[in-house]
Amino acid sequence: MNHPNYPAILEEIHRDIAPWRTAGRVADYIPELARVPAERFGMAIVTLDGSVYSVGDAYERFSIQSISKLFACTLAFQLLGDALWERVGREPSGTAFNSLVQLETERGKPRNPFINAGALVVTDVLCRRFVGAETALVQFVRRLTGAADLDYDLRVAQSELAHAERNRAMAHFIASFGNLEMPADAVIDAYCRQCAIEMNCVELATAALFLANGGVAPVSGERVLDASSAKRLSALMLTCGTYDAAGDFVYRVGLPAKSGVGGGIVAVLPGEMAVCVWSPGLDANGNSLAGVKSLEWLTTRTGQSIF
Ligand code: GLN
Image (tube, rainbow, N blue to C red):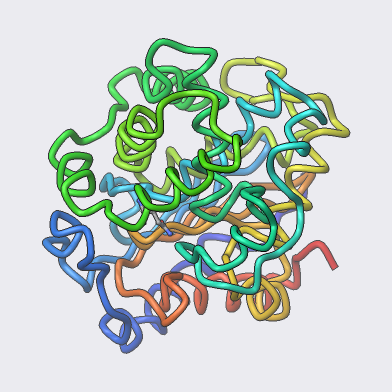
């Protein structure tokens, strides 16, 4: 395969991003996340032919937070197929990732699986099927990456659990419409644990590679999804993966992506590579400020995007 000069472009981005690294705000509504130094920055590209290119803190693990929604949704989609969409929609929300407003008029059916409300329903599907939904997810990302020591950070999970009033309200509200099958508190518990999974940029890019590879994970050879389902999940990332900023993100970056309030963003270029960037300072929508900018520079400087 003929790749762009990824090492040189990553080095350039690493250099140019320096002033932006402290421009965002580290998430502090989960107290444990506020302890992460704002100036951290890492970026990694993993290509389908197995090359790994990285700069900065690409091997330092961080809290994947909402990026876990991508892996959880993949498992739920594996289990239920299109029946999943009877319980969660496929439209961008245009509201914040933790918003409750649409749930009342839309009778407890969240807009999409990548906002908190939708992820709670997805986690409910996993709780119904697995004794420990978070364990199933941890095992899944271990298989996708080959990193047997991946796990969630109990302190981060407990820190979120102790401050989860909004997500609790959401889960109980969804339950009131009959769209949770398991007890709301059990779903919240599993949700906070899965959000607390820690991975680094190289691991996250590797884990997302199945989406760039027609649904087959290159590390394990596992067929995660059929090619059509992998296409559909990538389409959902494009329209919903960065919350209410999805339109602006696609305009600037042009790749399907999923972000998290830990400051990570993972994106895929089908047929070529997956990329992950980490910078904990967030913009007003809860996406990594330097992360979005770096990905914008990557697709502009390589000339590569899905468009
Ligand atoms: N655990 C976080 C929450 O529920 C995840 C949010 C995010 O990363 N956007 O608030």
